[in-house]
Image (cartoon, rainbow, N blue to C red; front, side, top):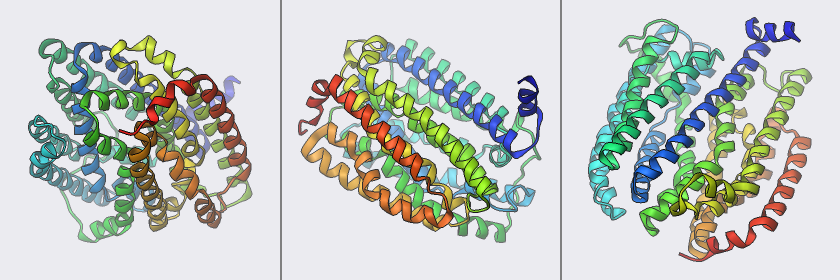
Amino acid sequence: MSARVAQILTSNSLKAKATRSTILAIVNFGGQNAIRLLSSLVLTRLLFPEAFGLMALVQVVLTGLQLFSDIGLREAVIQDKRGGDPDFLNTAWVINIGRGFLLWFVTLLLAAPIAEFYDAPQLAELLPIAGLTAVFQGFGSTRILVADRELAIGRLTLLAIGTQIFGVLVMIALAWYTESVWSLVIGWLATTLSAAILSHLVLPGERVRLAFDLSIAQRIIGFGKYIFLATIAGFIVAQADRAVLGKFVPLEDLAIYNIGLMLATVPLLLAQALSIRIIFPLYSRTPPSESAKARHNINRARRLLTGGLLTGSAVLALFGIGLIEILYDPRYEAAGPIVVLISLSMIPTIVTYSYHRLATAAGHSGRFATVTVSIALLQLGALMVGIQFFGLGGAAVAPAVATLVFYPALIVLIRKYEGWDPLHDAAYFAVGLVITGVALWLSGSAMAPLFAPL
């Protein structure tokens, strides 16, 4: 046993790197979410609920702008054979810097119209300052992308957790002193700025410089044009519920929904993190179509991953109401049924999510865009109909509806890459049905009011 552990810790084989990266990715994710939860528990006692509603809208807007301008730099560095070359990385850095300034400029232009749309005048002041995060992120080192490419994420883990702790401490100190939503914005800026600076100082690799190669830029943009479409769709999948609800519900209700969402989506966010950090590089290096052994290893990894994630969803679905009552003060108790319902809604996505990066790993970013755009359009349709007729409950179940409707088409796509594992899907969908049945038996009456029209 000790020899095997030593091999995992020291070997440079792909399997050992993947194992180390998986462990570190889970540590990174667990650490960041533990910090996020602890900061939420402290900050909800220092600030009024409307502050978190405002911050939820700020995050929706800035995340949307980030995704609407994503040209797939991370995917390009990981997938392209020249992704580790200095000229490639320097060009990618220059593009990212320009993108950051462009996003900030767009934020300045949109701040007042967005504040008017949501009838929240303070957004006109918050958004221009919060938009500086895009500039800071643009100056972050491309060593981060190289570490992802090489499955070397030890220092990335320390960087992410350390900067998040710093930002949270800034938030808590300012919230205690000012009792203002500005504490959240400034803390977010502190996190982003410290991460950008430290990415140049603590990560190994060649120093990036301002250099631009037009042919490389065309190569990156040519690959990323479909990633751009996919990330627009990703915004709809991840943020549309809050973007739409922010128009129809008071800020304090949006804050309560956002707290429930934060807890309920922890397993899905872990699935996304592991998909980007682990599954995608593995698909790129050893695709399932390469050999029966490669297919067996990837299927085994997916089964273990899905089992762990569904366990997390089951805990949240069965005990979410009690968890909220223990952790938060009575002003936020309404988030309990939301945790349960969203946890159940995430189950189909968790079962199928690791398929999504298969086409991109093969260099077919257009097919990946087709998947994400299709799911996004289905989810947006389900969201609009759901909110109109079933209120918050309709918004919460929209992801499950979209994923299940699209599932047959997803099978057709992934079979082209010999990536479909029907045993995995059948077993875990069955487990999901059992979890749903038990949760409805325990908490159905508490969730029923969520389906009242707004």
